[in-house]
Length: 356
Image (cartoon, rainbow, N blue to C red; front, side):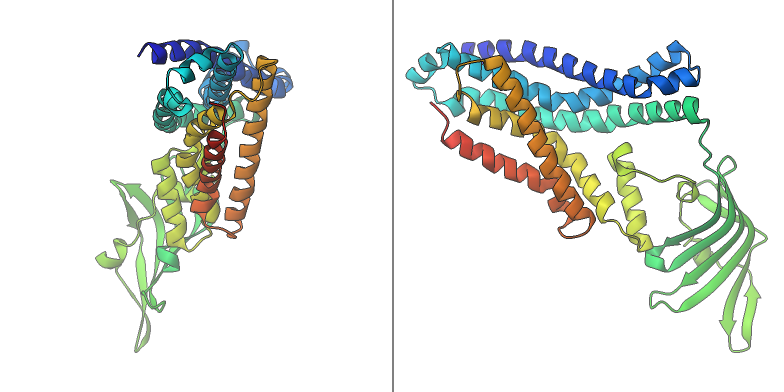
């Protein structure tokens, strides 16, 4: 326990210092990129400060993997340079056993990073983006017109002239309903439809069906009304990005795309990425253990160079696999998880040949 305590006493301060440093750099970069826009729009300093404060959780999320990588890599390299690990190895403790607490800590931190992203980063970043767009571009209009929405794998099609987001109301709505064999069931026309108590209330609605005598008009059947399940957010003038919503909302959005028969490979790969990306913490610690002790000189510079190189290589690999998933050359699951599995194997190989 003394060795474990000693190890974490060296790693934790470095991790906190690196986390603050890298997060601060990211905040300043974002501020510099938008500074002229803030000045041009005469945005008050208090508002700018609030926007930057909302960006801090996102920066901490981005900076955590690099900070962990730097802290562990520097600590182990420094222990090698000072010959402290020689005494540990001489006492019969292997490198894997010595660093196992760090690996367990990183594995648990991966889960924490996922929940931090889902519960803190996503809402604060959404507020930051919305407030920044408001002060720079004005309020975003979620009302929509000339709308066509598909549902139930194309078996339900909505066409509306206008959607009022404040009133949650559709104007001049047509709904085409098809059976499971794609034959026409009915066409519903309503002067308007309002969302109340989790369902659409139609006004001036008529249902048209084919009969032996031709087309007949009749009241809308309860069975067909129950098929009108699309939530108002579907009709908004708003493009949802899976990366900017929590996992539950992303799942609902992807299910909507699947029901509508629309392309969903890219959003699904981004959804899987929400779960795979946090495990970069475990990967970077594993890599640090495997590559530790490769040099005894310029430990600080070597550790920084290793951090940057490993992070860039991982992000490039993930970018390539996500593009392949987007164009459906590989599955969405592979696009998100392949880099994780690949780097774990690479880290295991490095550990196999690490100095002990």
